[in-house]
Length: 439
Picture 1: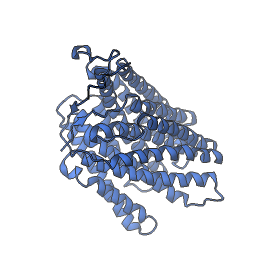
Picture 2: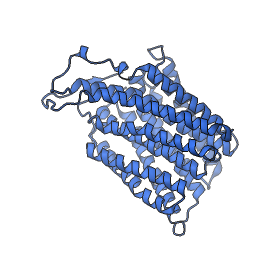
Picture 3: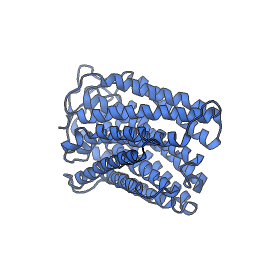
Picture 4: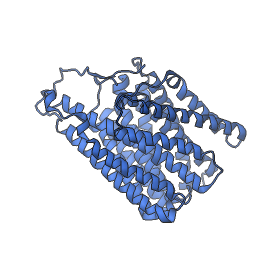
């Protein structure tokens, strides 16, 4: 069962858009770093430049988008009021931006004090997020959102593990004499919990609602929306606890975990292939690319260990799976939010006639979104190829990705301007919003 979304507690447009508009900016910064450093960023995943680029994408893009999506989706999907609202959002956004820039600078410059400076804002940003969402998730919520909320809870638990491991690693870089850690093992755990836990589980939870509603597909099957996310979380726990202790058990847990994510990707591709609108728009193309990238990364995990394969797998997971998902998601969410705020808040407080509103699909025209998809797909192909020939293709891949991100930013700004055209000076408090949205 899929819950009909209710917008009685819809947050201000500025709350999620603050995060959404920042996503392509950090992606462009990561692309600019790749353009500047060239093959040094793609030779090995342990390179300081690679780590800086990775955190610009994972913190500045993926986490930024996920936080914005949570602050928007929780109120309308389950009626959960996130404490703090706009003020908490501003604090999280500022802290996440500052911490991400400091951390990337710390990797590039190799200065211990920058790692120490980055820890505080990043820890504060995620502490506020987990605190606000935990308080909200303890509230009563209507049925129909159970599968999504279960995945979101587990994603937040994975985020806590990711942040703790990240703080330990940053402390190890900042005070190497005082904090001694098995850096390789802790780094692997940090990456696994961040990508396979926090990001992937949250994508699954959001997909249960967003894919059927915005991409006009059938709902996900019940066997996938039952205890599926819980099983994935427990497999990640088992793989982590057995690392370095029981290698066959760890490999078995990782194999089942990979099979679970492959099942999600295949089911999503099947739903998209049988969607009710035969012509694939740009968001559908992004989601297909994301699921294909996830499958590709899982297949690379079956190959023998190799530095180039490791980097390619990271490219497919971060730029292919996660960034493509967010790109497609924002091309549906931002136009809808802009249209909705324009519909329910005009300058003089009156509601406009439907004929005076632009159609949602024209707020960000599909032709513009599709052009940016082609740039993104080309950059992704170059990035994967650059893992094999970094000296030849790293900078062209960075340049094309930077152009794609700037086009993405321009398209989102266009969508925001339409919504802000209807921002009210005074809104009728006596007119409750009871409208629901179904697929």
